[in-house]
Image (cartoon, rainbow, N blue to C red; front, side, top):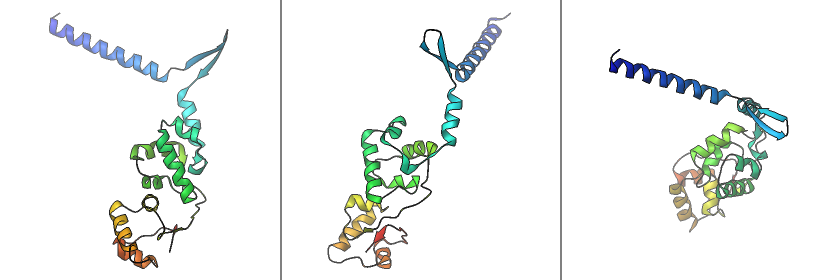
Length: 177
C-alpha cells in the first residue's frame, strides 16, 4: 500500500471517528449526582423544547430571566427603564428603539419570549420628551435633531405637523401633543 493512499485512509478514519464522537457528545444524556447512588438525567434538547413551547410574554420577563440569556446588567436596566417609560413592551422588535440593544440581543430574547398579547399604549407628550424618550418612541437621531430644532420656537400641535417635521409618515399610538 502506498504512503499516499495510507494517509488518505487514515485521514478518513480520523474524520469519521471525530464525527461519531461529536454526535454522541451532542446527543448524550448527562447524569448529575445528587446524593450517593441517586442520579437525575438531564436531556438538554427536551428541556429547551419544553421551555420554548411555554413562551412568556415580553412583559412578564424578570431581571433573572434576562440574566439567564447572558444580557449585561446595563442592557437589562435600559430595557426595564424603557418598559417603565412606555408602560409596556408591546412588541419584541420595539427593543430596537433602546440604545445599545443589538440585533443579537433581540434575537436571543425572541427565542424565549413572545410579543405582548394585550398591547398598552401610554401617552407621551412629544413636546416634553427628552432625547432618550424620543429615541424610545422610535425616532432616529436625525429626526430627533429636527424635532428639537422645531421645539425651540414652536410646539408640535398634531400628527400632520410632526410628519412634516420628520419628513415621513409616523404612526405611534403612544404620542400625544
